[in-house]
Image (tube, rainbow, N blue to C red; front, side, top):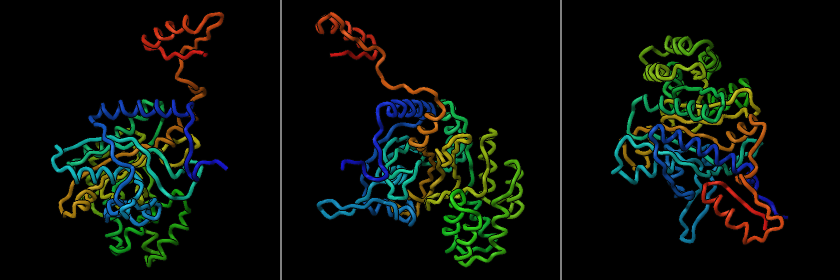
Length: 367
C-alpha cells in the first residue's frame, strides 16, 4: 500500500497557494522590521541538537536520529532556533545586533494529532547581540502586525522565565527541581490542574508550597494588577518583574496578556517568553511562540560568554488551518486566464497565450 509516513502530509495545490500567500505576507512584514533571510541545513550534528542549552531532555526524546556513512551521529532539526544559534557561533564576524528570518521544515517524533504533525513548517525571526527589552517588544509587535496583515484577531500571551524562577526561589523550591516544575506547569493547557499538581508533588515539593505557587500562577485582573501581585511576593525590583514592566510599556495593546502560568517547556529560554492564540477558532493550540535565550549560543561555543538573543516562531501549518477556517472561499489555481482553442489550431492560439504571460497574466491553455 502506498501511503505517507505517519505524521506527514502532502500539501495539495489549493492549500499550497494559501500556504505561499501566508509566507509572502509574513516575509513582507519581517523585512519591514529589518529581518534578513537565512537558510540552514535540515540535518545537524546530533551533538549540536543535544547541547546543554538547546531543547532539553523532553525534546531529545522526539528528535529523529540517524548516522551517515562515516558513522557520524546526526539529527533532523526540531526547530530553527538551534541551527540559527549554531550559525551565529560559527560566524563571529557578524555585525551585532544581527536580525534574521527563516522558513523551513522541522521534525519531531512525537504524538500525532489533528493539529500536530511530525514534519511541519516553522517560520522564525530572531535578534542576537542585544539584551535590550526593545528586541523582545519587537517580537511581540511583529506577531501583532503580521497576524493583522492576515486578517486574524489574535492574543499574545507573555511571561518571563525569571519571574517563574523568582517565585520558586521565594518558595524555596530547590534548583535541581525547577526545570521539572516548569515542564509540569507547561502541561497546564493539556492536563488538569490536579494532574499537574500531582506531578509536582512527585518531585518532592510540599503541598502548601504547590498551593502558593498556583495561587500566584492564577492571579486575575489587568496586566498591571497581576504583575503588582507577583511583585508583592517576589519583590518589585526582581529582575523578571522589572523586565516585564518594561516589555508591557512597549506592548500596551489589549490583546497582549501577561500570563504567569505561561512556561514554555524548552530548556533554553532565559527571559521573556511568548505564545500566540487565535480565540474563536477551532485551533486551540498556540499558532506562534518564542522567547529570549541568552545562553544557548555561548554553550555551543563552549564559552561562558553570553550571546543574548530573542526570537519568535510562527506555526505555519496551524496558521493555515485558522486562515482557511476564516475564509469562505479558497483560490484553487494560480491561473487567471485559461484559453481553449475552439476551431483554431494551437499555433494560432500560442502567440496570444505568450503575450498574456509576457504582460504578467498567469495563463494556461488546453492542448
